[in-house]
Length: 105
Image (cartoon, rainbow, N blue to C red; front, side, top):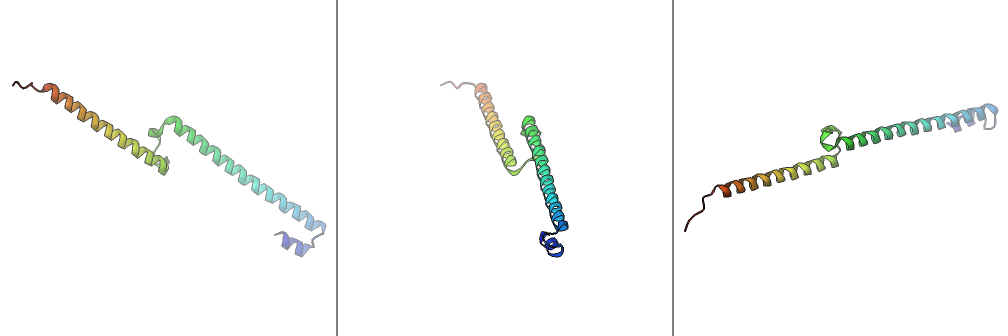
């Protein structure tokens, strides 16, 4: 853009220099707006992360979880399932052994 303004207005003319300064200022404003927008998004993500950590993984909706969190959730459910199955087996074994009548020889 500066090349075009310099070409048509002459590189050293006051109008070209003013326009160049204006374009440079506008470029800085756009960069600052982008940085502010990115900072705001980062802050929102940080707040969401803190909220999810405070609530616990079990309170987050499936849509809010990323792939790693979903895999972690699946593994926790597998561990829970295994633990419950083992507890049921142990409970059944205790119940069956206590209800048996000792055999006499």
